[in-house]
Length: 391
Ligand code: AMP
Ligand code: MG
Image (cartoon, rainbow, N blue to C red; front, side, top):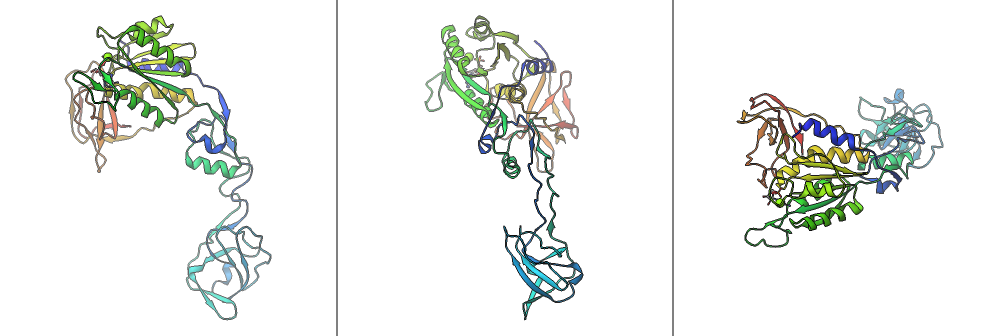
């Protein structure tokens, strides 16, 4: 049995970055940038009006002003705004020369002879200045960023239509267990539905990488071997759930050995999820996760996610969320690092949720996150700050 921190280090050290490819930028959503995105122009590219209104000179605001031009978007102004003059201007249209302010259409009274009067006394200039957001050649999105919808807008603006990204990691999922049936089947006596594999599939999909479901392996050496071999055919990472504890039918570690997988650990001093197995085979990775759904969920969060992030080139750094405990928590034994599902109250306090152990299938349904109780510690005091790892 090794410490969780050691296990994490082993997993992270085993990872490398996978290949890159160029994608059409809209298809790059949820991929990770493998190069900085730079803008080929400044933004805004010209001084533009931030509102619908009248472009004029600030010094004339107390006077009546003559409207000399209407400036629509996408057109260059033709006239220079002189003393006691103004041009009607639309949001996003270029500022005319001579004007230093735009007054909003709502704050203006139209008067005879094509004139207007400003009816407020305070004024902002209401101009977005050329280059105030982005300079030419400026890095607008950094290498290693996970591409989100807001990045797509920046890419569009910067003219980056074929970003270089890391190829999506492919993760295959296998369940093991003679007792399992798929969710669309009503289990007979002594059977249960396969929840783990689908939870893992969803966890993988949530990371924006490719999730491939392989199936349920029976608790025989042949079936387990066959499924693992199939999963390795087309996935960089393989996740197995079940079959890794000490039961008579838990063949996984032995078969992994036979398949040429180098095993790094078979057991971690963590709760839930002690019997977690990790190995590599050339440039592929395999986790044997415990069969109980809370354990496999937690070990995915703690170990699989960091591996997939690293493989994907994602320089994700989890932000700590330090919040006070809303009530005291106690445990009897403290030989393992333990993770507890918690809720965050409306007033920002952390409340441990009812948790019957790793087989408690719905223990996480109301959880906002997990908190750690370190080895050697039995109590978390009310008011003590804890780091909530959001899930
Ligand atoms: P194992 O690690 O195979 O000994 O399984 C530990 C426990 O988790 C047993 O109660 C199994 O029935 C249960 N279990 C294993 N695999 C799954 C699965 N895919 N979905 C739900 N429960 C499972
Ligand atoms: Mg089993």
